[in-house]
Image (tube, helix red, strand yellow):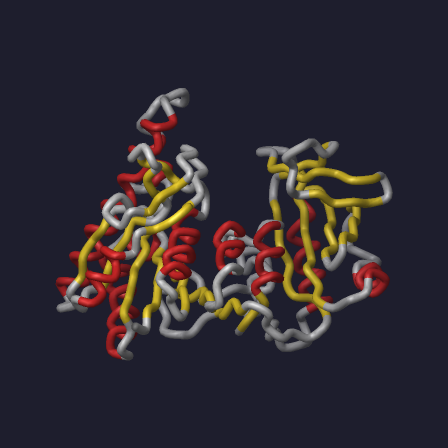
Length: 354
């Protein structure tokens, strides 16, 4: 059974126009003979009636975590029902399934659960009947039958785990951009989009702030022998293919930006650690800190070559070299200038393929 998992984010299901564009991708996959599983996020972004942040605002800040998770799960349920109905309206047989119907079992941690297992029998039955299966992302149920959400990037993670356990040939993450750029195009408008990128390199970029795919999802994807595509809902292009063990030329891979953060003495549990002349520092998000971190990820380079590449920066900042990553900690007002300078220096004159 040739299975493809597609995931649509909130902007891809928020309006009738966007849903029609999303349905066209499903139609193309069905015409190619694929069995399609769809994973959906809640509709829209903050301020939209069914967006997750909007639902959170309905409750007190100290509400019980089990109550909060149960409410937050409603957004994806609405999206699944609406999107399945949109497919049916275009003559594509579809069924909407909540996480409890597909037996997505988690470790029971409210707000940041991990998926432990999925009973795939219901999904397989619906696929064998020729239906597109539309599943709620971002959630699962505990052994106690309590609704638990997966945290930020949860729908990406849902799609990858479902794809892995269903032995899908690929996972396609649809969003509102045509792929993965070497640096955030909102900061560097002329940034080139990558045709493909190695999964480990993409994980490193995501870990340090490249927000297009959540690092948890990429960590899960590394377990399975399948490609992940990042594509635009509003265009028919292939987008960027994230490959496990992809071949790449030596040199810079991409630039990640982490806005509003600060440096701290590392403590147990800190995962983002950089090391410079003054020793190791932990990087943590801090709203309104006034500082940001720019990270350049390299492939196959010597540390001395990376240091030489990062010389004579146009801003004052603290430079850290860790393995194949160069981190620059700067005033947030300087991050745009720095990003544009490094993009021109590293990617401005060469085609980008990794």
